[in-house]
Length: 281
Image (cartoon, rainbow, N blue to C red; front, side):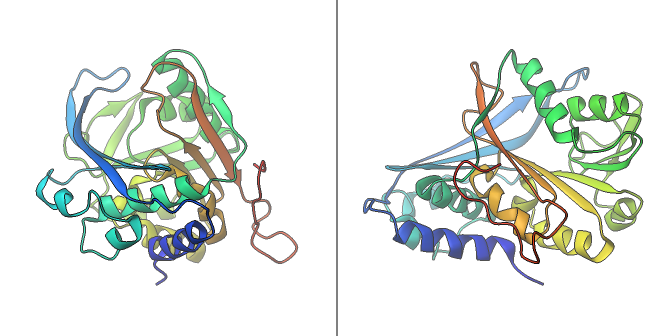
């Protein structure tokens, strides 16, 4: 099975070698915890940690769920990003560094913006994610999101909501019970025409198996990304139908939120995987 993240890292390293920027030192790694709630849910969740990598020329970001360990970052800060990727590091940090490579070399999407309050922007994002899914479609949502569930219900979709986080399993979101993703995930996905996932599939090491699954069973994959959003454009050539890349600072922060959308047109264009240049969508 192809290792998509390794391929993307190799591509990113090749791209930054062509950049005039010589200082690719990692200046700062910020690790922290997100304590949050969800729309129309009373529960407080503490399962999400975050990693923000800062260099002279770009940033990389990932959410993750394993315990925070600050010790290993001491050997990575003040190191060239290329050398850091040769070290034995946690997967979430590898994803954040891959994200940083493409932040340094530049992404190819046309800039768009969500505006409004936090919840208004979350709703606009959900509408953009669901925009190309026909009414009444069968959809599996990997990762509970109130706004996406709400939009899917508005389009009369046959929806399954699946999550790995124990504190979310069993929750009711607009009448949909959140199911356990650790139990027979492939059987759940077989029943859906569309699969919606987040960039967290790279941190949980499930990206390769999901991309393999959609090709084998002819499913349409839509990914929305905060984690690894700078690498999102590269996922079209691996079979993603649509990728929404949301760039830092995310919709949770005040002010407009910048994003790009990449889409596959009819799977192949003139017999080749689509290539996206500057200002393309």
